[in-house]
Amino acid sequence: RKAITAKYDLNDDFAEESGLVCGGQMEAFIEPLEAPPALYIFGAGHVGYYVARIASDAGFEGHVVDDRAAFANRERFPFAASIVVEDIPTWLAQAELPSSAYAVIVTRGHRHDLDALEALAPRPLRYLGLIGSRAKVARLYDQLLGTSRVQLEQLSHVHAPIGLDIGAVTPQEIAVSIVAELVGIRRGKASAIADASLRWMPKVKQPQA
Image (cartoon, rainbow, N blue to C red; front, side, top):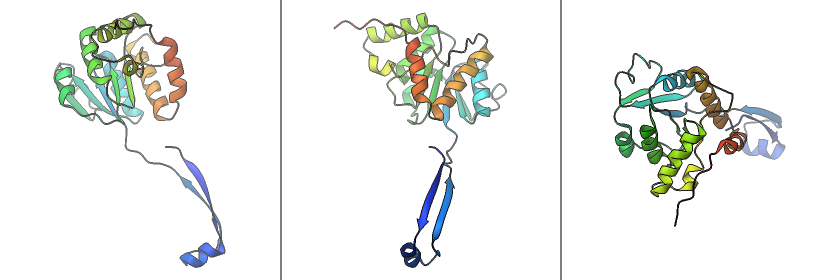
């Protein structure tokens, strides 16, 4: 997934076999071209709006999912590749997200976040992020682990609190921190971002045997 400069030695044997070259050396610059990565944004509120807007400019293909037609519509999201107006858990129950997809959970409340996280955590996604404070994230984790619906190992892959820690406060700033993390994952900075995420990983209670 990285651009390289490749060097080829076109020796006499190769030139004679191919009949297409006359020897010498050649350098070729090879740059991978990828389709825009799919980004699924669960929640069409203020943060979801700015994430979709900024991510579109950064080269992501945004798909917005929310159960409120007043928020999830083409007028608000002209830059989205698709808009789904449906109950999030119901849609996720029948939707197949590719393993290369990115997903951010920025719904309007804990209940909706919990439902989306339960459905998405077991999936092999390129990125999964959950918005919320450390306390909120810990409560959601405890709820899921307490019922054995999700395994702790599956939650360890979730980026929560979502985004890079830049002191973001407003919806616009939070969206910047989220998209910055998405770009970092896309461009191969996953290890550094994972280390930063572990520092913010909430301590959750281990489920009782």
